[in-house]
Picture 1 (tube, rainbow, N blue to C red):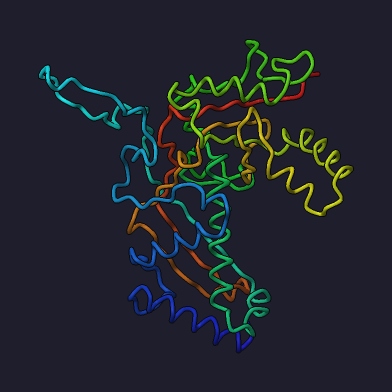
Picture 2: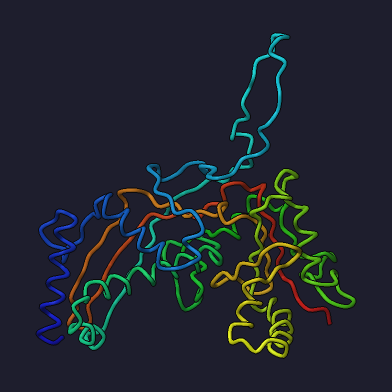
Length: 337
């Protein structure tokens, strides 16, 4: 580490310690709730997808989903003149998810050669913070779509998509609402096929059918979206892009086609790290990440034995589907042979 980098890094240590009211950030400390909230906001703002879902601080490590932004029908009429009492619809009638916030380590290391490049910039602290929060945001999305378990000790080599870090949204549907999952139509086939001779004529047909898995009052919601894997959209969008390129010479023609893409009449969400061969129908407001307030720990450390600095952080997190009646999942989708 160069001398100017050392000065910049020491300044960063002092700033973090001051914000959290601790003597030093170079020893493990509890991030204050106010700073935790600010850090969570930075993580959320670093990716477009996280900005569209819920990121919620909760007090209890375990509990029932808060049912944010979801509800069933509530309009009606009561003949109070006949002595009947008006009775507002309770959210307890929803098919609620439950949650358990489990400790998740978000540890990041930067080689001296990397931070040496930033030392000359006056925004050194901003660059370092952004690098840390950006990776945490991407990790959370990856876990949300691919997580199937919370192993006592994770293994990145055997679970490169962080499958063993926490239980994500898709796994929540598989376990807690299997009646809303289609993973095969011909028993024993282990797949859902699309195209000529397949289970469905097209991907649009898959979506139209899957919508019927939602509770009846959710099927025509204006905010329904389709999360779809990129491999499934590839042929559909490739044809549209090629057609657009021939008829429209504007540079943004292709991106406009992708932005306006729809399946089964619903807008398409291109979510990072979404599994291949998969479609999920829900609203973005139905997906949440809960973090336990007061649970974030941090330790900034100089590690000369590895020629690097390291940021050790942990947070108690849970991935929640607010209303299980507002989600449908189709997996193992393949082109018909």
